[in-house]
Structure formats: structure tokens, C-alpha cells
Amino acid sequence: MKILFSTSELAPWVKTGGLGDVAGALPAALRALGHDVRVLVPAYPALLQAFPGAAEIARPHWLGGLLPTPGLREATAPDGTPLLLLDYRPYFDRTGNPYLGPEGRDWLDNHLRFGLLSRVAAWIGSEASTLDWVPDVIHCNDWQSALAPAYLAYGAERPVKSLVTVHNLAFQGIFDHAALFELGLPDAAWSMHGVEYHGYLSFLKAGLQHADAINTVSPGYAREIQTDAEGMGMAGLLRHRAADLSGILNGIDTRDWDPAHDGHLVKRYGSRRLEDKAANKAALQAEMGLDVRADRPLLAVVSRLTEQKGLDLFLEVAARVLDLPAQIAVLGSGAHALEHGWTAFARRHPGRCAVRIGFDEGFAHRIEAGADIFVMPSRFEPCGLNQMYSLRYGTPPVVRATGGLADTVVDATDEKRGNGFVFGPATAAALFAALQRAAVAWRDPTLWRRLQKHGMARDSSWAESAGHYAALYEKIAG
Image 1 (cartoon, rainbow, N blue to C red):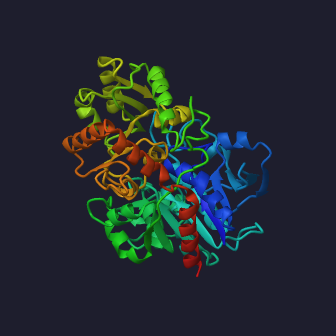
Image 2 (cartoon, one colour):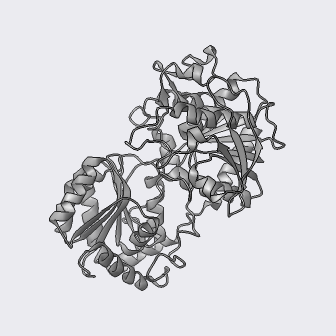
Image 3 (cartoon, rainbow, N blue to C red):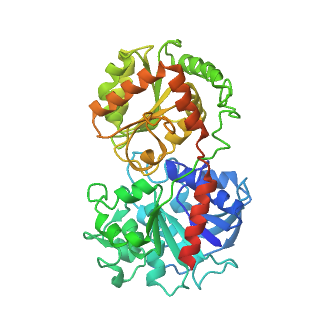
């Protein structure tokens, strides 16, 4: 199979969330199965800096509307994955977040920037392409490349197949009607059976409407988004396309996230050397300015600080958590109110709670290794990766029963498979009850070691997931 993997993020160079991690790992896992996968990604400054010798191999012309003529450069990632870098400096030579300007608002030309990404993905699968490589399937990811199936549907293109993966349904790429002309789409596309969505143009809706298949990043999320409560306005369309909708659980990079070989840790460990985890806890407490003590559990968060992630619920019960007794460590950034709330709480409780605003990859590894309990009370979670990192690091997570969290974490009440703590309603009371259960279980060495070993034994690698994707590609391509 020849697969074009179109993405707006690519770890480790450009990453704002799970999409970057998936794009950095799934293509390599598919190539290990023998498939010819090439990754199309905008040539952001970090990528141009990483691959200064990337040669131009094509210049897609006459893309329609106001779309410019970009360059297409070729590079090879360290793992051997071929990269196609979409080079148009006025669109992508910008600092910081690929979607937001310095003031934290969306770039006003995002429809053109990612319309170009979608259009070039379709161009690579079209008769107009000057490349000597033609994909069997174009794999689009989230709204930023989801317009490609619409370009295929409304253009004189060869019948290349398409798949849209929804990593987070909340982000839908919605723009004014004027974008239809600017993106070079025909008037025929403006209908409820096309790209129109309540009087606006939606990239994601266009992909869900026109792709040959749709999938999400966990089986649980695939079921949830077909309900009116979780469907973000798209539930009716997703139910209509239920026969073409599936869920494939994400994996994690088990080479990078491996406590037995993790260079970020002060002491490496494994399921047979769990006693060595204690050194990482003491080091984390010292690094964050917490009291260094082994007689109380350390609860940790590594997350965007948003209501989606349920961090407002955790803040609401944080004082009660400290009184269990326990300690809290938080790493993340996001909504100003939550950043302020958590930092103010930490100032009121020195030595017991510590908060660091921002993100640092190495520090995230040290938190996963040093914490006793990982807290992830998301209101919705398409897949989630941190709970899988936590399981692999012997740090039982407390999660809400939603999406990929429910697919990966088994409550401690299951003696044969339990690896964490699961609660139902998205309320502070339900979260606190689960945190209290976890703190009590932590004081039972036999129970805690069993939970740790169950979690560390779980296979979270990309190998199985890549096999499911390969089977889906083959089904799509017939």
C-alpha cells in the first residue's frame, strides 16, 4: 500500500497535542509492516532548520481560488520515513504555535494556510501531479487537512481513496462563506451535502461528508461522537456514516517512553525493579520544591489546563486532596483562569503543592516516573496518551470513564486486570471519591504493586494499532 499521511503537526519538531505524536510514530510503524508511507507536512521553521538540505521536487501550479504556488521539498526523518515539506514561506514561516498568532488568536488566513495543505494532498493524488509516486490512500488528520476529500470529490482527479481521522471533534475548521471562492471550491460544494455547515464552511464537515472512510483514535470515542451529547453538532452526519466510521486506539512510542532506558530519569527501573521508582519520586519532589517525604502519595498532572481536561474539577477538591494527606504536582498551560487558580493554590500551600506553567518534555518524563498517581479527569478524551505513559511507568492513573481513557484504564476493583481508578460523572465529588480510593490503595503495598504490574504489562506500542490501520487502508482501497 502507498499511503500519503497529511498532517499539520509532526513530533518532535511541531507539536501541540496528540496529533503530533501520532504523526511522528504511526507512519514509521506502518513502514515497519512493509507499507510505503510518506508524510506531507507544512515546512515550518523547525522543519526547515532540521532538514536544510531538503531539495525541491515539485511546484504544484493552478491550485484554484487564491491559493498560491508552493514548493514541495523532500527529506527523510531519522527513522527513515520520507517527508514531503510543503514550502510557502508567507504562510508557514511563523514563530510559535502553528495555528495561533503572538496574541493567542487564530491566524486570520488559517483557511488559506491549511486549505493549501489539503489542496496539495489532493494534487498529489491527482492527474496533475508531477511526482512519480501516486498514493492508494490519502490519510487526512483533523480539520487542517480534511478538505482534501472535498477537493477530490469536486475536481477532475484520479479515483484515489481517502480517510479522515478525527483526533478531536471539537476543532472543526469553520470559516465564512467567502472562503469557498478563496479556496477554489465550486458553487456546487455549497450545500448540506457538501462543505456548508449552518451557513459556514467547515473543513472537518467536508471531510466527514466526502471521505471514503472515517475513524477516530479510540473505539470509545467513535461511539460517543455519534451521540447528540458528545457529537459537537456533527452527530447526525456521523450516525449517517456509521457504516464507514471506526475507532482505532492510538499507541505510544515505547522506545521513548520506557522507564528502563529513559535518559531523563535519575534512576531507571522496570516492573522487576519497582523499588527504584522511589529515587525518582524524591528527585521530583526536590526539583519542584515539595517536601521530600515518602510517607504520602504524590499526585501529578501533565496537561493542557482547560475545562475539557477537567482540571477545574481537580482544583475544586485540591485542598481536600492535600488533607488526605497527599502532595500535588502540576505541569501545563492553557486557560488563564486555570493557570492563575493553580499557581495561586500552590503559593498558599508551599511544600505540598507545586505548579509549573509551560511544558518541558524531559520534565514530563520525570513527572511520570516520580509521581505515585496520575490524575486525568477529562470531560471528554478522544484517546489520551498520558494515561498510557503512566501505565508504562508504574504510575496508576485516576481517569474519568470517557473515550480512550475508558478503553485503556481498568478499575482497581478488577483483581485480574485492574491498573488504575475510573470514575463516572464529571463532578468534583466523583473525582474526589476516586482520588480518595487511590490514596487508600497506595497504602496497601500488595494491592499497589499488583496495579503497577498490570499497567506495565499492557502493550501500548504502535504495532497492533498500525496493523488495524493497514487493514483499514486495504478495505478502503478495495
